[in-house]
Image (tube, rainbow over all chains, first blue to last red; front, side):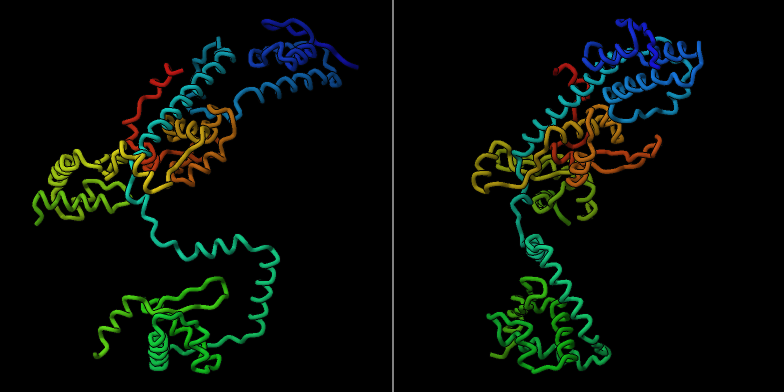
Length: 263
Length: 173
């Protein structure tokens, strides 16, 4: 059984369903509808004859509440503690339309402030700073990022397989770093090898090939390269992950070594 | 010990090389000279730059050496496209709310703008124009957002006090 409840609020007199229809057709602005008044009238009507089956007006009322909640502020209102403690809340609360108008004013104000920011930022943008033209060398990882952007999931899968295969196939080699003499000899040998080929690019594979090294020796040579790179004596470049490592003597080092050479 | 003329030249060098505004306090500390001498030197440097292509600008609590705006067109013709921050209307609106209401929560921003602003806030955070300066005591303890020194640099102002009061924009619509 369907119950119709008559509502009487400023600007409207009729059934609750009609009110919902008018709101939906924008003939009444939901912002102007005081839902507390509507709810009070609905509750008053229902209290006269308590029947738990008469819930349909609440559903209708909930529609109105839903529409109003969507129309009003999207965010949750944050109240200060002072607001909650204030007992002198005026009986004649601010009309919803006024609240919306005030918000529109605030919005227009911040919009105007935003326009002002845009104007002064544009003026400021006419003043140039020296750092804007300093490009410098791009960090080397930029290339790697560009490379990564181009790869497909299939490439990733292949790479992962490679890594897994390496881990399974290759034993872990350990080099006793306390054998300082051994490492320092290797550092000197690798440096000399690269230095003698100054002006050309030497790959890490060339270093290994030339000295016909076994796997533990390769690790030692790699440590020597790492040492030379960290000491700034050699520059190492790698075009792609897992690609060849190319070694060149750092310019300053080349000059220093040439100066030290007997004429 | 540097004399005034040398101090002026050193400060000019510092400002030329620095990617960020430099405060008189920083200069005084690093050069181990009196702050009053630095201020004196700054005034002298401003006079020295008069009529030239560069000028001193007080930004975000420090000084920057910048080119004069009237030569912008020619300089851009020479250097081509230079890095600069361009913001959308939504970002500018959000920035103006934060500027005048800071520290402010996302909800408070959205209540004024009427739309979800999380994307804009993220973008402004990424650009360093705003940062999170705490949490509100309101339910859920939402983050509070404030503007940064980079924002002052973006506008080219020394401090927030240099901006017009929010009321002054009311009559503009």
